[in-house]
Length: 121
Image (cartoon, rainbow, N blue to C red; front, top):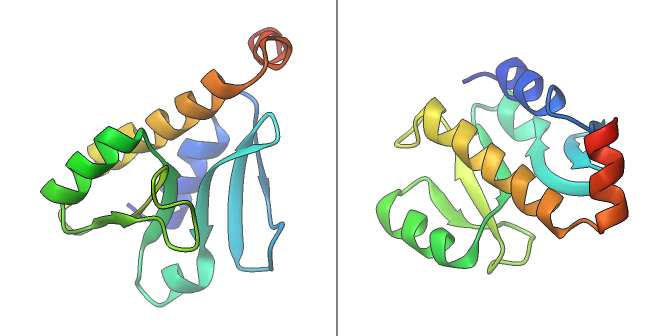
């Protein structure tokens, strides 16, 4: 997967916007102003294709045990976030599934009002 495929997949989800809230190289994808994916563009330029994604804590532990490329979230709450290194032992299909899972977790945590606003947008 390349950065354009990743960006297109994330930005085409309902209610998603992209931001650079921390610096000019950390691309953050948000749904209804809540983060679900972070990508260090400077790392991608160097060939380190990784992203941070929110994940169910139990599934996080399973993924970390099964895949060398799934690690506790760098600079994030390590219980709820993973850093996923792409193009290694994580297939594109699994990466897309993990993006979906992160997005769905964030949507599920939104207030009823925001979920309705997202649904009606």
